[in-house]
Length: 426
Image (cartoon, rainbow, N blue to C red):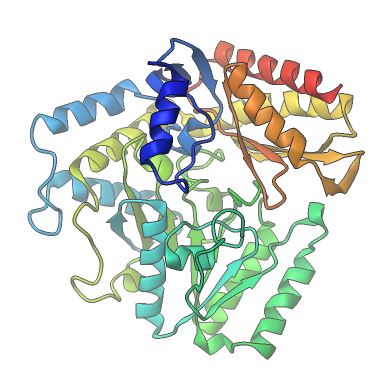
């Protein structure tokens, strides 16, 4: 059967809300390459949305999961646990930034990790208010939709959302939002809407993912840390997309000297197998009573052994360093395009291999170009290149190749993008 035939079947049985970007049905994958059921090859610049940082079916990850499934697939870690559950928690606790002793709880998805972080913060503080940021993305559950600061398509038709969630501007010089403006909005919130003593947590992405790959200024994050310390507020860093070597550090917050109270993780942790979690200061993590955290599948044996293998690969193949090299190569190509097409390329930005290009109309940063963005994604599929868009204005292409991508494959993919962009720019 063809891709088109499978897509027709999909539309008959899967809810419309579960849309797919491309009608391409994958048959096999290896490292940074995919092949569909029709035999067409694709270069993957999406990595399953920053999940397979170690590449599709990395031999170490594949071997670890294969060995585990020969022994058992599930017992429920809350009933009869297993050693890999403890080993992975030990590794994450040890590797999290800052000197404070850490503990971990596991979940299944990024949204679940965020939900648990909010629960932990509320249990620890006895407060209910949560501050999040415009442009942030934290998931599709009711609570995490409430936290998410991007309306389309994530929140349309799903309200009402939980109360006592307050959104503030995310500092972004490119879009005219200064750090001083964002901090003034925070002070205004404290004066007009809710006092600091009722805020349980501030949740922020050190680098916004779905919002457009904007990085928060280090000084802004430091001010938030100081405010949290001053008022007894839990500082949550959402590293679901930016974690596990993607930005050139294991966690993006390590580019600063800041120790968050809680870190949410998912995506890159499992190397393609579902697992997520919260890593945090032990005294805060222990606030919920026994049984207050958990779930049937959390910290699955397959996810745990995959996570342990991913951490080994990051160390052995020096993927933090390689992320910087990959990102430098991608940015160099995009800056070349910016020089050639300044009327269309507004900004090239990135941290490690978390790179984005912002597309505009007529050289005006205030006029986004979602039409060109959409064309590049759709035409990329036809040309054998998997690309993802993002951004509140729908005008950003994000580059998330596996960190293990072969250099010749990376060069090939960048050449395809260059050719595609040049053809559409005419």
